[in-house]
Length: 433
Image (cartoon, rainbow, N blue to C red; front, side, top):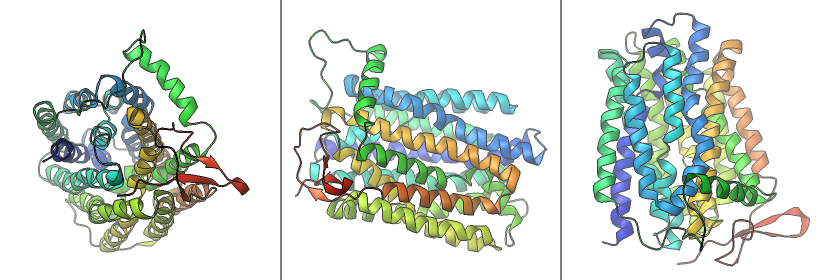
């Protein structure tokens, strides 16, 4: 077995454990807030949005810093840092008895966590070029598998014990993931960005490089267009998340006293569908182009999101969540696949860091906006708003068409694209097997 394959298997398992822990409590914040004494319905919606959004908000700004630092000191230390932060700050949430303390801990968790980007980078920099999309897609299935187990497990814990015990479970399984990474993962030599003579390393130096990377990666061009479009699509997808636990019990077929489990099944339906189709989307993106696939999946996901506003039975919601998951499964692998194509190996961490930041910021703004909208217009109209925003993001992605052409393999992020007539931009051709 090759070194990158061994790392892939260990990282897959570590990501799975971390995802299980993180998703045990994320969608159950409304029920946990009620459990600790927040009784006003509007306050529950607003606090739920803020708590779901807090960690990805701070993670979005720190992602490029950790990505650039990982390019210099290694991606394994970045994974250890991320899991250690989850163990510490989520574990402390078990003791929290006020929304304000939960918010502080969530913000701190986001500053130091973020395990997906370094995991993607560690495996992708050593994988064969012609398998980048498939590797990204398969590695993403670890998070999706965790997203199936975690919500259901967290709901069961809340229904039978107390919702705060989900924080303790998250800390324990993240500690197991940390141990796996520490003892079983080995970085492949030659995949770090070697400092030039006299160049400083460390966080301060990385901050300067982050600014330089930002100017290059976010200069006018297809990468900036893609990042903005992915931000809108992902933000729309998570818009209803913070109030889902309040919506599911209002549907016929839901079980009194099992609100946590019923909400967990809704989240698990989306994750199950995404898990089943993500490898297919990864292979398809490698063969036919990630840009077109990103647009297709975004349109079809929006068409599955809007009808959720009219469901009357919980099984109808589960079915539509599953259908949306089929197409959402192609969004993130396509986004990361494009980021991989647009960056050389030694700067892959920075590129993934910026993509992670866009997705993380969407994961923050979406729930925050969703909680505020639910408090003002209600929950059902929220699904229509989410679908509309997703279509806006798709239209933004479709402003420029991507067509495969050859491009220098060693060019930078901006050099991987070339302007053509009519304002279109052409995408670098995926390496052929």
